[in-house]
Image 1 (cartoon, rainbow, N blue to C red):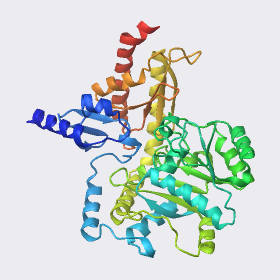
Image 2: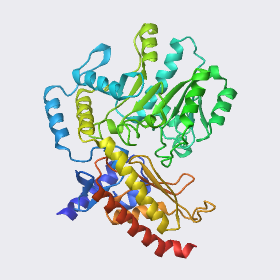
Image 3: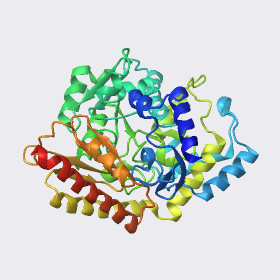
Image 4: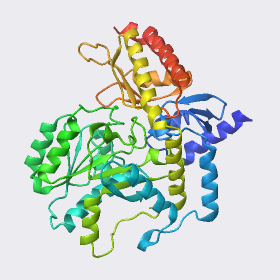
Length: 443
C-alpha cells in the first residue's frame, strides 16, 4: 500500500505542484526527493518509513525541533477562539500586541516597535519600503538607493530579490527593481567608496545579514559591523540587519548582531520566530524611526499584508519564544556550536580535501577543496554529491556552490551531544566514501 501511495503522490506532485527553489527537470524525471510524513525532535520520517536527521532545520528555521505538542495545543486553543482578524485601520488583537511587546524586550538597543509579515521576503521588502518612506517623510526623497553585499541573500519578493547579492537569484527575472547596488562582502572601504560614488544624499539604507546564510555561512571579520555602523552614522544612512536566519537563537545569542555590539536602525526577522510552525515574520524599528513616523505621518501607512499581526501566528510565536527561553536553547546553541566546530576540525585533520570550517552557534559550514594551499576547487563540485550520500545515511544537509563548494549546517537548537555525535559519525563515514570513490581518483 505504501508503494502504491508513494507512486500516486509522485504522479500528482509532478503534475500539479510547482516546487519552490527546485530543479523542475529533476522533479519531472525523478519525482520528489522525499515525501515527509512526520517530524519529531531533530528527525524527519518519510512515506517509506526512512528516518533522517534534519541537519538544516528544514530551511534554517525549525529552531525548537519538530512535533512540539505544546505548539499544537496553543494553536488549537487560539484557532478555536480567534484565528484571524484584520489589523488594518488600527484594529488589533492581544497575541499581536503581546508578541510585539515580547520581541521589543529581546531585541538589542532601542528596537521597540514591530511590523508583522508572513515571512522573510516580506520582511525585507517591508524594511526597504519603510526606509524609503521614512526619507520621504523627512523631506529627502532623493534617498532611495539600497546597498547590499555580494553573496547576500534577502529573499525572493521583488525588492528582496533585487537586494540579494547572489546573481543567480536576480537572473531569474529580466526586469529588476531600480536603485539597488552591491559592495564587496568583506570590504568596509568598498562600502565607503560606493556611498561616495553614488552620493550619500541618494542612499536610503544599507542591508546585511549578520552571518550570510545561503551565501555560504560567511562570518564577518570581528569589527566589520562596527565600521559599517560608523559609516552609516557618518552619512546619515539607515542600517538594516537581516536577521531572518540568525534571529531567535540560531547563532548562540538571541540575535546575530549581538555578537558585534551593534544596534541597527531596523531588524528584519522570520523563520526562528515561530520555528516554522506557522508563517510569521516582521521588522523591528528603532525608537527614533518610530517617533518620526508618529510625528510626520499624517495619512494612512500604505503598506500592509492581509496576515500582518495574524492572531494564530502571533500566539504560536509567543509560545515558541517561551520554549526557547525555558529550555535555554540559545545557550544550548552556543555550546553545541562549539562542540560542532570541534568535530569539524577533527574531520579537517583527517581529510585533506576539507578546506575552511566554521560555526557561529548552530550555524556552520565545511568547504571542500582540491588544494588547501591554493584554495583550488575540484572540477566537478563535490558538495552536491556529498549531501546525496549523507541523505542515504540518514542526514539532510544543503550545499552552496556560488564560487565555492560548501556544505552548510543548521540543525535544530535542541540538538544534544549524542545527536551531534551521530551527525559527525555520518559525516565521517561519508567523507571516507568520497575520499575512496572520488578524491583519490581526482588528485
